Image (cartoon, rainbow, N blue to C red; front, top):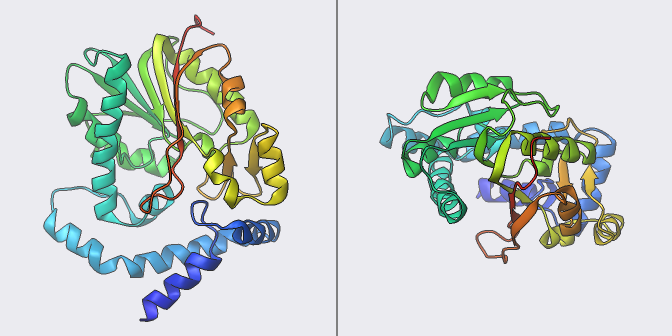
Length: 292
């Protein structure tokens, strides 16, 4: 009973990007203004450690050989649920394979996970895709990359900064994907990272990524909605860029302008469901330019 009451409080007052109503959007702005949203996020992390304690212990007992990141690395990048980390990572890897193979023959290709976090997807993708392929991943979190390097040996991990600089040569990858990464970047970083990712992508290679599109309008304030409907990026930016609390919402025309020199081969706007009331848009961009 006590946990359901606590959860009710967090679900209706706490301001996670995927849980807000329009009222929460205004409360969010207040918390951001007074710079106490990080404190709330830390409290929520502690609450989730308690909430998922028994379930997570059960998962560890039943899966003793499955190596897990630290609780905060998991919480910061996804959610503090070991079973969901495993199952959603595997399901997403299978889903991505079905997308990749529509455009690229999955033999002898290089695949990059941009913003990999604690390897939720890439650790499964190695086995799901198989073949004579090479797998790479990069993230700006030093602690995350250290954990990945120590525990996921089949992937080459690299540390990057929030600045758009990757340690790869021009035209290096056939496939790059980045799920919910642009959603935590400023407008300037959108342009800088788009240019850098296209640089390291081979001509005819594909870049698969997700954004917070039209379905998120109900989570925005009136001013944010007006900006979004005028095809302008909406950014809530009082926090450290790249962090899970930093949030950006991308109108479709903004993305089309961002990649106006390439070919947008697919833009999918998923419908809401009970399981996922706020799905992100999916974009697939093919590189048609030469080296930048």
